[in-house]
Amino acid sequence: MAKAKARIKVPKTASAGEIITIKSLVNHRMESGHRTDKDGRAIPRKIINKFTCEFNGKPVFSCDLGTGIAANPFFEFKARVMEAGTFHFTWIDDEGIKIEARKEIDIV
Image (cartoon, rainbow, N blue to C red; front, side, top):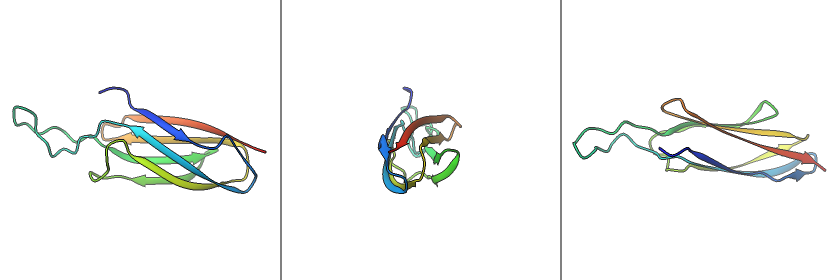
């Protein structure tokens, strides 16, 4: 599988107390576990099963995912920023592989 790639959209700046919109997408080759290969053997499930976002070490958003999740999962959510800092995004798949990304935001 090609290396998974995360795409994040976070404003570069915000006012203290502003509610911002955060968008995240990760390219991940999902496999539901319901298909078979050319020899009729089941292809093991491999999906993103956990997504989390933290800001300066504090939880902002998280969810557990199941087989109904689409390939390349996209999440959009809002957060209120009171200070400058770093958003840390983590996706974990069935094999325990972590895909991580970080985005900083400044207060103006």
